[in-house]
Amino acid sequence: MEAAQLETIVDYASRFLGRHPCSELQDLYKRLFQAFHGSEHAISDHQKAREWLLSEWEAVGNWKAEEVSRVMEAIHIEGVTPKLYLVHLAPARTLGIDPEIILQEFLRTAECFPKDSLLNGGSLQDDFVESWRIVGRAISAGLINRIILSACAYGELSLELEKAGWPAMHHSETFRAAYSPHYRLVLDPSRVIS
Picture (cartoon, rainbow, N blue to C red):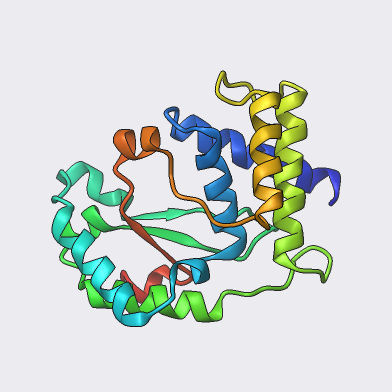
């Protein structure tokens, strides 16, 4: 990766942690994983995906009017990953968006998400692993400075993840308690919100 792209990844990680100060290392990993892989890992069965969405839809409350503007959140890394967005379910519900529309775009995203690198013609998986390693070097160098992000913790987690083949992860309990993350990944927000 070029120096500008390295800086972009470090900035991306820092911005994520700045917006989510209760994040743990696994939450940063999860966000990077999502940016490089989309939602395919979350789909094994369309009916289960529908049931999962509708269950969450019923569980989330409506958001206050001033928070509804946060219905969409861009999570892609500009110039590094394909454009990708989170649709936050609570504000979507408050706005009266049909959950079936969200489901259809979520499923389409899982099927259509590119696998090829935007940078070098390789795979997004290779770019993801390299980006995670860039984050590790930035943590070691003190460029991403958070108590929970020690080089030792990064090394331990990375060793486990590499042995497991760099799998998807869930958010940490700390992240879930602080942010109640209920969302779906979509490629095209205009298919959800017109």
